[in-house]
Length: 352
Figure (cartoon, helix red, strand yellow):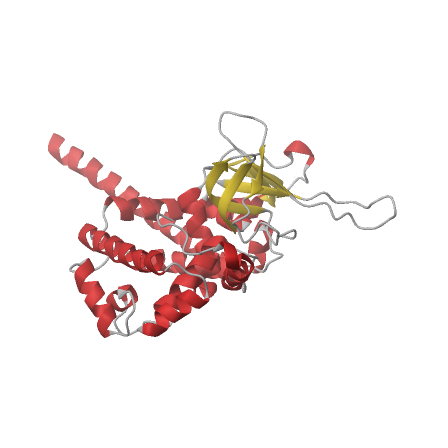
């Protein structure tokens, strides 16, 4: 996100450059994504060696220096993570660069983290659900709500009105209408698999534009967005068992109360894990912690294009996540009880 776009658009070959950019954005599970397009372009470049790297970049209208700068930025970030204790120590940027040169002229990061893995065996398209969740966590509340005008025309045909895009700005009650920037792969998209996009940047010119946007699932918003609140069952004209689950006070989903409890519990445990890891990077995840994370990853990956939050009920991964979250809460209560009992015994012994 800190790098400039690698996509070039020369005036004399603009259409060809647009086709190349669209090619990198294809194949996503939930529709075109600017962030996925950049990742696919980078890894396609990174997987090549020597002169073929440069030939590929020129053919696909990619900025060579920008892509090389992305590789250097990755190595610098890896060094920072290594120095902070999040990954193994000793991963200096210069060392990782040497690994990459010896391992097939790549950036070296995958080799440094997974020495036995194929350095070019990573396809960003396979990680699209995780990418959306990470972008949601890092960019929230920069979310676009997509609204489509349904109904029929006077002649009885389905309305082809283009979708409208709105963002929420804190301090205002009314949503703000925006447009997708012409440089985005979603600029001409009219059908979206998800009703939300996460965006990177606002641009104010003749209109308010959003740059670089990616579809994000409702589940990702619930698990990685803002604070969760919920209403009581039966409020607001909903069925008796339904509650309104709200993210950050403005994105709402109607879900059964049992599902609401599952989501709140899993979200609470995820937040606790992240806080603990950030405060002490050397903290090792327990077997239950890892099981919860794996279940959430499986759940994100298993959602179909038509899934909504309620589809969690159909997945075994959801049940696994709930079971592990409940187990971790029970362990915490048990440990808290033991500590309280120990302190009480200590006070009693001191008084005797």
